[in-house]
Length: 352
Ligand code: UD1
Image (cartoon, rainbow, N blue to C red; front, side, top):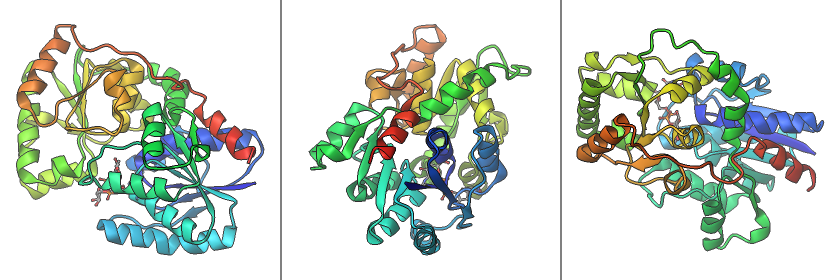
């Protein structure tokens, strides 16, 4: 069995690492393709090093562009790789443009596709990732879901049950593996209590008014509690484009995986619009305030520590106050978020 993995953007790396490792442990033949969607050292290389991901066999070097350009470039560059390497199964991860582009290529070449993190739905089609999720799940042959809501959504869309495999959250495998390393990261220079902030959703940062309003709320937060804000390149770019003064928010560079885990673990609260961070904070039991009005990861709200605050400043402020007073939301860890998801996926693949 020859398995080809496609990764492209930062949130793919911590999902692919455990599956690559589990399959390597079983002696499977594997090929790794990096599309190059993310290319900065601190958005890509450093994750390969910390997660011990092998050097990619192919780097398609697609880089940035509009959605259509990025998708088309991945497709054009990826097709010859599939034709040359002839994999039995192609594994795609999450919901980024590289995921959907690779899926489209494989479905037309009649190569079997496995989607890791299948079934998640925000039911918000203005979100580019929602389109990527829907298309990928529609075309994939094996759907590996992280939570039972994923099974439910897929069944509702008419996916036959034999295609759906509830395996748990693979990203938590990486977290469990590297948490001991994160616990050794020095807290030097960090205040006793702080809010960790990340922000990069197009709906929040690409519009000048909403970005200004969110940054103004964060400024209010920072008057109560110091903020640590590793800024995504997209956000930094938009702040510069719109000429917003963020001196008081002390932006820092995107953090490597282990250092970011340490920052999450030590935070009083995490304020974010990321998908994965809603899950990591739920696992770590750290209160999370999500700057979105919906989530494709509802289990983090129903079981975990996540609260959706959207762009509602009053709600952000009142929830923050509760957390500050030690009355923040507590939660439990969802089923099969146990560090063994990669192993389960490998077993299913090798039993085909
Ligand atoms: C992508 C994913 C998003 C994921 C995020 C994590 C899609 C549709 N979106 O969004 O789901 O949450 O990655 O980071 O696939 N840039 C750099 N260096 C890089 C990468 C990007 O400077 O290494 C800048 C470029 O200006 C680029 C912009 O960031 O145009 C956006 O990058 P892109 O890959 O298009 O989308 P993300 O916002 O990163």
